[in-house]
Image (cartoon, rainbow, N blue to C red; front, side, top):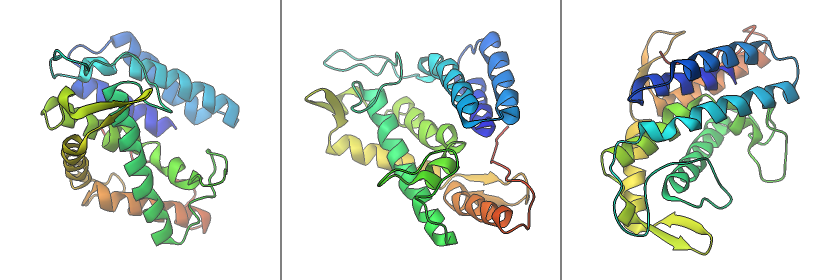
Length: 227
């Protein structure tokens, strides 16, 4: 969870026009507290505070100007089940895609993706995939959302309302899938091994690192953290 908070902090530093120095400092402290947490309950509280700070500044990373019409691409707060505005609809879709890709990565390594550590087992819930996904939420899912909006691969015209929920129309889904796949193909340097891999390949690399920890070959699992 410390890795997730650190990556959220980097996202604000890289993409926000004027990130709050106070928020950045508080998030740095949250990451340190997460590393020292002694229980899941404590970690849940720290994660919640980190998410509140991060999503409080999320709108400042959206560069596309608001359009007139039924929908706006402004972001006020995180909501889900169902998502009630376009940005939250994109976030929920991005998390679903990333969860699916990490479920595949877990299976490729030989893990049961349903048995996790931080996320508790629940019928139909890929708990281990969700555990591994946490540091990648800002780097892959949220980055794909911001890129799709800021490059106008998705616009306010690409959304429809279905009852209480907001969803993408077919053209919007095509645009977002393109943004997501582009992000998955982006190359990054692995901090441990020093070689460049795509985010798609990195998901499996991290699953294999976890396997080495469980097999006793490594002492600690190192979450992927960008700078």
